Image (cartoon, rainbow, N blue to C red; front, top):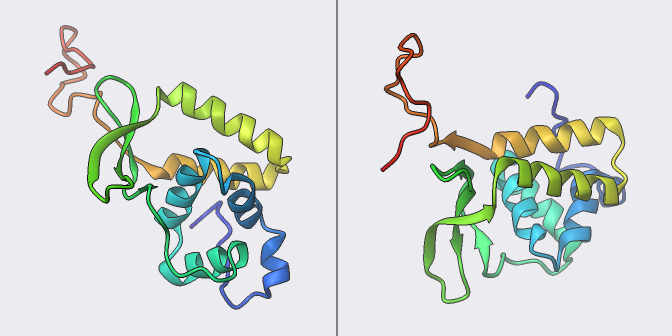
Length: 157
């Protein structure tokens, strides 16, 4: 992918520990933002690479535990960024609000990137992956004719 550095699972663990991906997983491990970071990385990297990253963070890693985000993000008609989440009762709850809006998401990710002291390249990579994690915008009416001045951009059900 252009603009995004792909990690190699054959890299030495000490080398991978210095990547923003592992540092971010470690930093957010016990925070609500950790579920988002894990989902974002899982959406981009294959299972082999993700397991390598998680084994660096948690050496005896076998599998992720609930709760976790099990889908990519979508912007709901209300403007909230939502995803499917598996909660502790092991039931999937569709379209659970992860962020209140795209602006809320952007702000929280900026603060996280600032806390992590990401350099410009890592910050660009992080935000590229975050943007790609949001795969759909349900606010837009797909049947709208942009040439029609009476067309409404937002659909209401």
